[in-house]
Length: 82
Image (cartoon, rainbow, N blue to C red; front, side, top):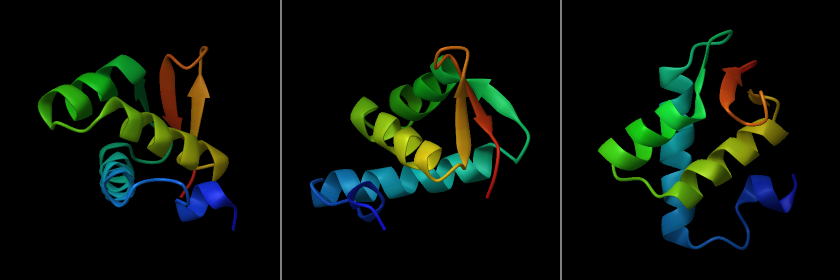
């Protein structure tokens, strides 16, 4: 495993928040579906109170695991795998 996947260098709170966001993204986006980054940011950061840093870190980790793909210059998030 790489350091990003293990969460090294992150605070415990940020690491916990990233885990919650990953679970939320897996629940919200079935495989093969996509949504805009702006919508995710509005729902997760605005309505649910997660931080922008945690959302971006979760998307980066999920991209490295090939779970999601960022499309159209990062404007769309596509769920590509488990």
